[in-house]
Image (tube, rainbow over all chains, first blue to last red; front, side, top):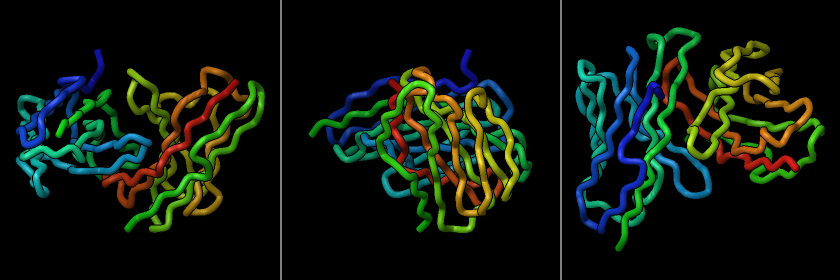
Length: 113
Length: 112
């Protein structure tokens, strides 16, 4: 069983819809990252969070440490949001030299005009 | 803005060739990483480095080696390329252990 599970694997939405992508993990973590990968390969870090909620523009990320679950929400989705969204969890505690990320397999989001 | 560059976007090599993939970052980051990305498997860590000349194995180091002679440059070496090393290779860097990682554009390697 993969340590990081994302759902759904694929998601198609109409422009303007509210999007939710979920991430569940099975290990204790020190931080969770959400990343975006556009066609062509480039990966951009969207959020790093260890508790609560963060917001950047139309993107909102939440995490529930007790339930080992995080969600990424996109409000008022737009075709330019079409990308692969990747969840990654970080262990051991921040600041340790052997800190590393374990990645989910990604969610392919397609937003149609 | 942090910039991470990789030496090639696309590379075609033959089985048995020695392959060098280079990564350069311009923000004086201590930590650098090499990943490979395969369909259905996601990103997997090959090696990382936390300082010049220092390296640590990741999850899948077999068949690979790395070199970090200068802080800004981290090289991934395939000593004898094999077809199962056909993949997308991504380099990343971060300032702190556990900090945000900044990724390069990736090198798509095809080994024939």
